Length: 246
Image (cartoon, rainbow, N blue to C red; front, side, top):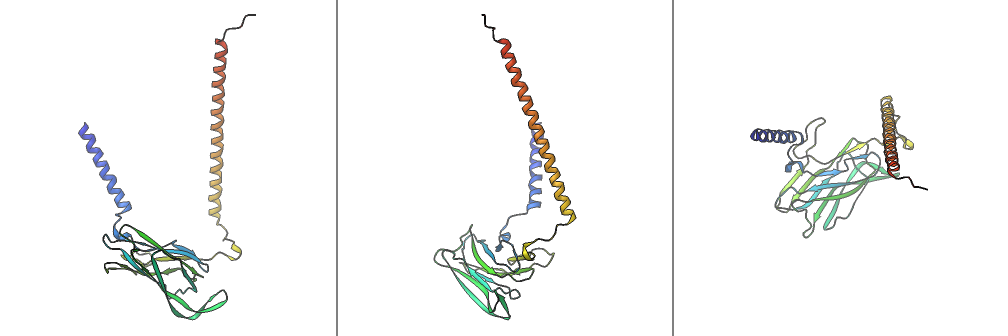
C-alpha cells in the first residue's frame, strides 16, 4: 500500500512539473533581452523610460550599450540620467521637415545614445543595469523601436535589432519597443464609458453591496450569540452563589 502511495505521489509531481513547464516555459538566457521600461507612454507627452540591460554571459561583463532612436519617429528633446561608472555620448542627425518643440522648430534630433563603462563598472554576470532617459514630445506613432547593441568585455556583441511582425511570434533577438497610446482628449476628459462597462460597474457595486450586507448580518449574528453565552454564564453564576442571610 505504501509503495502505491509513493508511486501515485511521484506521478502527480511529475505531471505538475510537466504542466508548469508547458505553461511557464524554461527561463533560459534567450529570455533575458534588453527591454525598455515602462513599455507604454502617451503620444505628445514626455516620458521617463529606462533601458534595462541584463547580463547573459557567465564569464564576461557588459561594457557598452548602443541604443539607436528610430528615424521615423524623431524626438525633439532627449536627456539622460547619470549612471555611476558609465559615460554617455549622443549622436544627432538632421530632420526634415523640422519637428516642433514648444512652438520652436527643431532641425536636429538625437539619433543614437552610447553608454560606456569605466573601470570595473560593467554589468557583471548575474546582474542587470538600467539606463534612464527622458524624452519628448513623443511622436504620434503606434510604437518606437530602439535597435540596441550590447557589447561584452570578451568582445562578443548581442544585437537586439529584430522587429516583431504584427501578430507574429517574438523574434530570437527582439529590439526594445515602446508602445505609444493616444493622448487624452482636450481638458483631460476621457472617452465616455460604454454601456457594457457601465453595466459591469453596476454589477460590481451590487456585488459589493450584497457582500457588505452579508458581512453585517454575520457580525450581528455573532454578537447576538456572544450576548446569549455571556447572559447564560451570568445566570448560572447567580444560581450557584448562596443567598446572604439577614
